[in-house]
Amino acid sequence: MPMIMISYRRADAQDMAGRISDHLAKKYGEKSVFFDFYSIPTGVNYRKRIEKAIVSSDVIIAVIGPNWLCKNQDGTPSRMADAGDNVRLELETAMKHAKPIFPLLVNGASMPQESELPDSLRELAAYNAKRVDSGQDFRMHMTHLVDSIEATLTESSPADSAVRPTRFWYYGASALGAAVAIAALVWFGIVPFTARFTLASITKNPATAPESPSPGISPAVIARAKANGGFLFADSDTRLLSGDDLKNLSLEELRIARNEIFARRGRFFVDIKLASYFAQFSWYRPRQVEVELSALESTNVNTIQLAEHRK
Image (cartoon, rainbow, N blue to C red):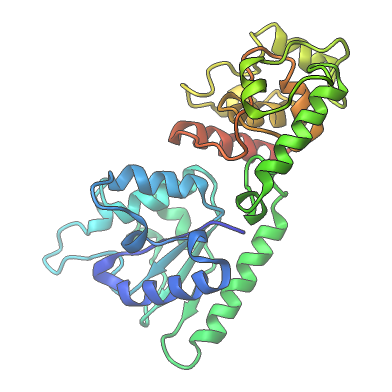
């Protein structure tokens, strides 16, 4: 299922944003739609939670009403001109991470002119906006929106299971992931067949290097990782990766670099190539299927994924 974030201004179009959120939640499930009014627990840092939601989202819905810019009658700068404005920060973050943005015009609003937007958001004026009316055409307009979302997701290259887990993971993939990963370890002689295979036993007995190279992973990639302590990017959990870091990597190297972020956290891989590749390194201790990434790690995953899409 896709992850969808809804960006809006409460003083502008909260009712319509909520209605749009409800419709998308019925289509994709409540956990697939981030709507700040319901999605941010009390006491949580609002801006950090919003940034994390944007980084992990597939689509950003920008709900634009008549007062979206928050112009002031006395001629002073609008709220959108404030670099600390939450709506501005949301869209700047979405553009920074190359997220698809769907502007929705509600309550009779018009698309802002380029001259009305801050420099960082002027590109938004060129986006094709869709109108969503609150009357009898609402369902029809939402159907068109869903079609556009589906088309955008179809155009994107499918992410590996380690990046975007489906509902299957949440309802039983732990056992399957463990079984396949264990089978890979046995097949390549990493763990003896006579061993008693449990999550605990593998954690206590981290894999050692197999005698033969990982299937499907080029020896050059393996050699590069071994020369760097078993990582392509040993610091991808503490440093934001840039385009310069990734520009000379092959598609295979990008895939390994992305998945080693999950592997560092103890991710079990169903993909036998990934399972056997990471099992070569003593730092890899598979513990669970679903892992929690930090905001920095999530950002690096999305940065690498974008580089993969551009290859």
